[in-house]
Amino acid sequence: MTALLALYLSVLDDRNFEEDFTEVYNTYKRLVYHTAYKIMGDSYLAEDVLQEVFLYVAKNFSKIHRENC
Image (tube, rainbow, N blue to C red; front, top):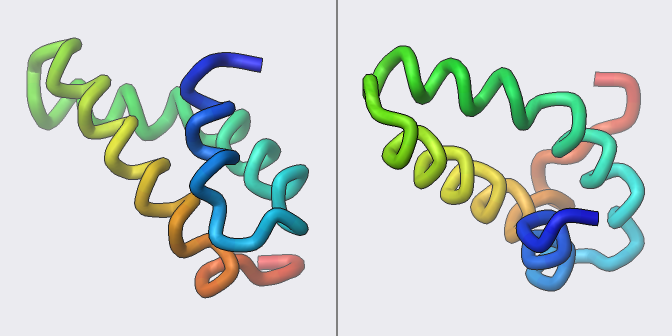
């Protein structure tokens, strides 16, 4: 497990969603990074965007998580 994933799991708003969040993170981390890189044009800024996005998602996962969405 990456250090960042461990950080996100530590702030997850509902610990029952750890497996679901991990799946979302592993599925979308590259897409989020590459989209941010296209917009920002800088790898460090894209990494910052990636971290902010998943930190926000982790803190609000129980509000935005839906089965079969």
